[in-house]
Length: 286
Ligand SMILES: NC(=O)c1ccc[n+]([C@@H]2O[C@H](COP(=O)([O-])OP(=O)(O)OC[C@H]3O[C@@H](n4cnc5c(N)ncnc54)[C@H](OP(=O)(O)O)[C@@H]3O)[C@@H](O)[C@H]2O)c1
Image (cartoon, rainbow, N blue to C red):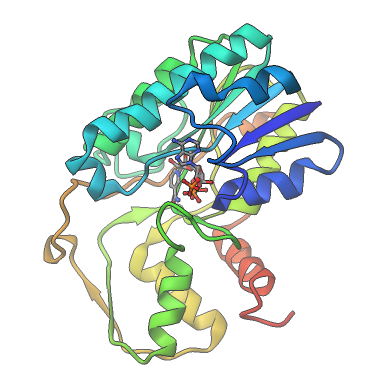
């Protein structure tokens, strides 16, 4: 397959490039090459005529999305609309990367592909709108991912949670982390492999949840990072209400897939994935 990856130098995009190159022709497109909000920048897609267009572009600073809803909708929703339209024009499959934040957290157990989205904040609403626009190209896959950590670090967020924790510990800063908000920590390398498997096995179009297996609170996630690395910083569990945050967040947004196992895809446990990430990043020797 010829696969174009938009956001190729982002956290997920970097691993997609690495993984998809094994067996496919991959065209990496950075923000300089393609601006998803501007169809005039799509000439490279027309020239290359890919079979698949993977859109990882997003404005995903969740609190900033509350202050800048127009930007959030422009990138996350209208951008998705534009990519669905160009994919349709080229006869290509669209892959859109969505989020656990399309859910409100009321379920209090992992959300599956069968659950109904009800986002609490502008980011989640704009990404849900992006999902709906993506469906305008019948030949689409929507992958909902969550709490990503990848070797490249999120360009839109300036790193990831794991690196933030390690950096604070190395500086001997006291660390407080919420212990009442649950999610599924997820390694971008594993997401990239799931996407590759779904594309290669031509699974039915639609929505898939693509996270590592299991869930934890952010505090438990931090604790596991320090356990694996043998670090002993001062780590305190706190409540979400103690943190001043503009955007309302779901208190439970763990995802699981009921669809992937039907096709033999079983994501591995997040702790195993975390260990592998720490090795890949050079924090841990094998
Ligand atoms: N990070 C998470 O924890 C998380 C959780 C749930 C869902 N997601 C979703 O997962 C996807 C990938 O996240 P990530 O962590 O890999 O993000 P990332 O590192 O910020 O990567 C996003 C990429 O898209 C590019 N981009 C941003 N705006 C663009 C635009 N208007 N047009 C074209 N390219 C643009 C960025 O380039 P520049 O940096 O040069 O602008 C960057 O290369 C996103 O769709 C996000 O909504 C992420």
